[in-house]
Image (cartoon, rainbow, N blue to C red; front, top):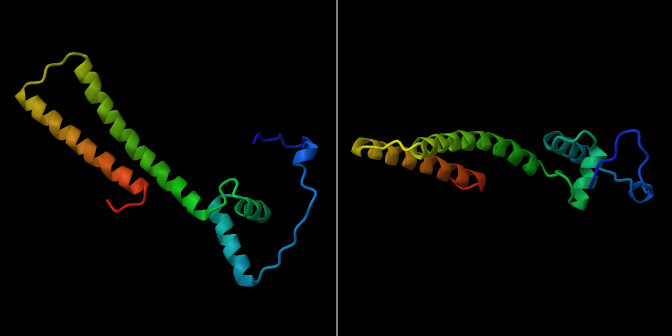
Length: 127
């Protein structure tokens, strides 16, 4: 869905002309407010609409996953940079002796283990 610039009238099919009133108790309101804060949204009505219709990022778990994925993306970027340096070195035709080959095997194994841990963490499995 494309965003409409602020101050521009919405087309008729996107205008919200119906209002729904929902009553909640104090505990429910507190829980909705907590979830709103975690979701990153600013308005409770928008959060509730997104949660009810399944649009946007209404669920708090999604907000937590975004933060987790951002951290892991950084870790994965460092691992990718290491692999890129190895590939660059080999593509330049540097010949590895027996010691270099063993060192390279150790580095690649370490990188493999890092990627394995990151992949398992991204899907929520224990490392």
